[in-house]
Image 1 (tube, rainbow, N blue to C red):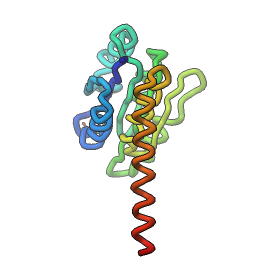
Image 2: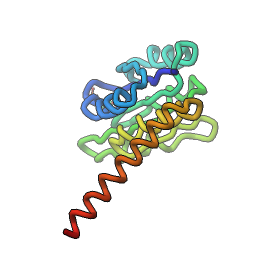
Image 3: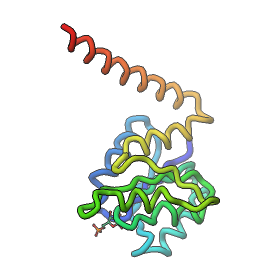
Image 4: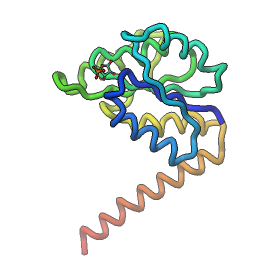
Length: 160
Ligand code: RP5
């Protein structure tokens, strides 16, 4: 199976990013996590991105806050699918990172999830890998069924 790269701009993003890592682990999907910044370590970010496909990655998740250019900078140097997680910041509540991540120019797409949407970023990366992996697709179906059953149980409890 291809690996998922989980990149974050700073270790201060880790409490949110950990939810993506936990989700990947729960599906048995191999991953590598790195702290690379579009602004503070641009060369390392570029090098990782340029070599990601030949290093066995299938999808790249990028989490960053504030002027969040990591996902876009990574996407500029690979044609692997890139998923951006805008991280909530103190001053602008994550709108800064959301707009910086989602408003990509035509030609360089970044699939942007919600502010702090780490679980969905991981699930989307798994869905990408599951296009060519029946066993992984079955695990995704199983999770959807489990999630639906949990909601239905709450509905039943509400009316008792
Ligand atoms: C971004 O700046 C990081 O992704 C982080 O969300 C934010 C603040 O970084 P630190 O000052 O906490 O390292 O590049």
